[in-house]
Length: 425
Picture (cartoon, helix red, strand yellow):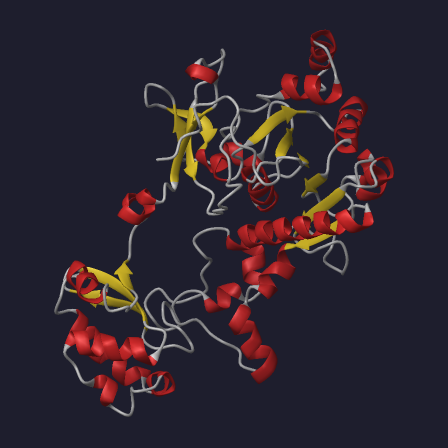
């Protein structure tokens, strides 16, 4: 398990010179800003006083308190808000708007996911803020983008999965048990949008090195969903093929799916003819010499014959026995884990993919706070010289308001208290 460095001065990340103002909520925007934060950027997350990000309330499951009883803080929030500092500002007030403008004037990047045009009424849109800070890179994340007939509509991941065709190719085919359209088990379009937004921001930063100017980035969930249809989209665009649902099987590669074993199921992902030949040799069958199955194209054509034969064979051994048999043969094979089993996997543990952080120094929780230790999944980005850093646990609501207003805007304790008394922060 990875833990934050003992030193009070953690190593600087690749983006430690950047300031990011995060006005986004839920998942796509926060996923983007967490990537930037993991790489060292100082990310200030702006939240509504008393409420905060929607995902703070999306539970159960909720964080337990010291006695093991559930609190009112949802675990969802921890997935995408590590390494950020949280401040509370009411942007519906003129004073709150001015605070955000002042923060934006000294920021490199701003990320928001309000409805198209929603921030213009507050004077916090790209045109207004770029006039104050021409170097600002302003990333807007919406369901449908800044243009087109759907631009004013709200869009959530599930809706976009349905509209993009993703649900039409996910799940078992009609007529099979459990058949019908199915969403992916996590909000995959939100996550992909966050990743694309991260790439776009890094590209805009590189462009700024040459132009000295920031720019507006228009990220739309629907655009991303259409892009990540990948080979399924390419098949339609070039061959007119409209794919359907086919469960865990692959439309173009065989055998590439789950198979029953003596004690459960396993996954075989055989991607080429050499792997299939090695599987057959290890399993003691001569199917690789059968002209129907010798090539991948043949295996796809004769899928209905091959797969039942393989299923009968795979039932003769336990899952662990198949893995042991194939792991040194370069034949991709593995268990179908639940999430708990996945985090307990020896490789996952060796890579340090479960991390824990404390919100409060030495575990000294302020009054009204019940959650200190927060676990999350480590960044998968592995840079040899400037790796991701662990600086802040996913923060409590408004945990860093005073620190940020003092450091970034030069406000003193009296000024901050006056803002708090008026409900601005």
